[in-house]
Image (cartoon, rainbow, N blue to C red):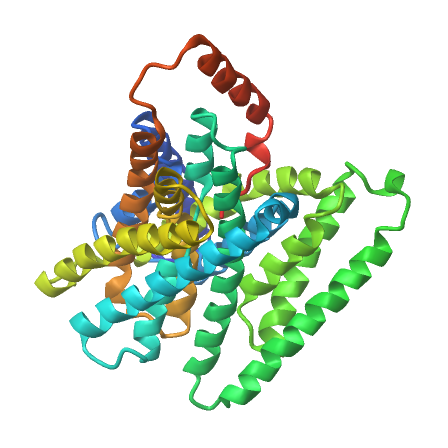
Length: 417
């Protein structure tokens, strides 16, 4: 069913199919203790060319999915908590730095060994960039359940994930910029530098606007509209003027707004629109783009090896960074495991790479496998590592219960990374 099957109104049937299928399979995923994003991905695979072939994509889906990914990155930025980052700033930076270098090297090496080519080839490096991504929403919920979220270990994971995202966005921008053979690398670096100058100027402008009395905007729909408009204009400027990925502009728009009093209100309202419409279409579009027909023995073996590398590289990289920062063995292992989940961040990166022709579409199944398995395995491994073998005493149980109550209100303010 393409955009012309039933005339100009085909898109309504496509939307009905995508929204209903992503929700139904999302609920099914939730029933078996998996994130709903897994169900949304599977919905796209099932209705797409790989299975039922009911939806083949099209301009409408592409543009709607692009809005969805911009909103997701804006929410990731506005959900950032710099207060948490300051608590373990140096440790988080060290953990994040080693935690992106090791997966990036592992991904690039895996690609070069299986697909041929040089380790420094842009396509090899981009596979490494995909593995750099971290999504800690599942980790956060698991730590909350175990009463470990506000520990030094939990705070280090949150801080490292924030820095991880920022480094990943910058590297993604560089790789995509270098893909265009007509673009001078020095010119690309200058444009990126100018983009960050632009971000600083935008932050200063927002600071001036924040001097307007709060009664005119706080908890009013207008602040949500202006906030989302800010994300869209920064996305446009990033792409059009600086050659930087639009999601980079959206992410930094969120970062600029995350320290202001209205950020939670904006987050809540934008998240509602994203959750109801745009995000399901985005995740389904990834599933639709995942063509399983072309998977041969080489791709299957590559997928398995890439998955192993994705898991071990984060555990080793982030665990080593934790040990260097004087964390104990169990906490270091837990931090490494907590950073394993790739989630929607890896999908966003892969999609941008496909658009820039730096990732082969036949590798999408491998990336989807990494996302699904790492998302499922992370909470399981965390609970195995952090759950005490002895039955907790009364005082210990009371402490855990109190922690659960304390963080219940915090749960909704944590954005998907």
